[in-house]
Length: 274
Image (cartoon, rainbow, N blue to C red; front, top):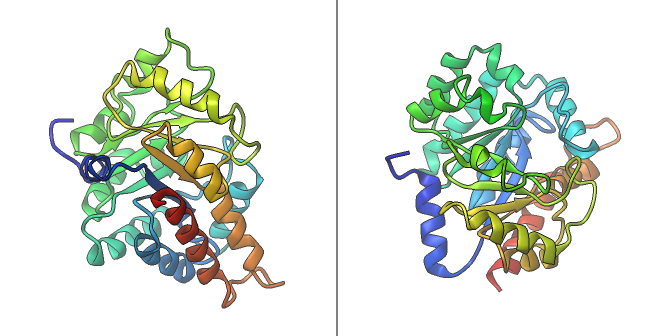
C-alpha cells in the first residue's frame, strides 16, 4: 500500500493518544436490515474505532454458533451482498472517517463476481477486507486486486502461525494484522492474556503493522488486559450474542436490541479509555 488509508490514519491517531483501538464486529443485516443499519450508524458514537461488518454466508466455518446464527438471521431476513455494500454507502454519507472492514468468506465474493465486488466495495467506502478462507498462496484471486483498488487486505495470524509461515502471512497484508487469540472457532474460549501478549510481540518483530487481537474477548476487563500488549481489540461474538438475547419470541428485533448493543460497546470503549 502506497497511500494512507482510513485504517492507517485511525491507528496513527490512537497511537498518539496512547491507547488501543476498539474494533467491533456485527453481521450486516442482523437481525434485519433496518436494525442493522441503526446499530452500524450508532457504533462510532458509542466508541467503536474500527468496524468489522460481516458478510453473511451460509457456511461460516471459522465462526462459532453465535456468529453462525447471526449470518442465518441476516440471510433469512433477505440480506444480500448488494445490500451489504449499500449499507456501507449509507454509513459513509454521514461518517467520512471511521474505517469499515468487510469480513467473511470467498464464496459470496467469487459469485458476485470478484472484480465487480471490489469495484463496488471501493466505491461504497469500504476500507479493508478480511477473507478468512483465502490463503497467501492465492493472493492473486482477491488480495492483490483489492490492494490495486486501494483496499487494505488484512490477514489472520493464529497461534499455529510459526516463524516459518509468518512471512507469507505478512507479505501482502496491510492496515493491520488480526491475531486470532485462540485455536478454533470464534467465541469458543477465553484467551490467555500473557500468551497473547507474547505472540503479539513476536509478530511485531516481523512487521510495523498494528496488531489487533480477537476471538474470545467479551468483557471490558478482558479488552483492557489484552490492549496492554496489542494495538487493537476485536469484539464480535459478545455483540451478536447480545443481539440474539434481545430478540422477541418471533426472532424479530425489539426495543431493547439497539440500546443493548450500543450500551455494551460504550462499556468496552470506556474500559479501553480508562
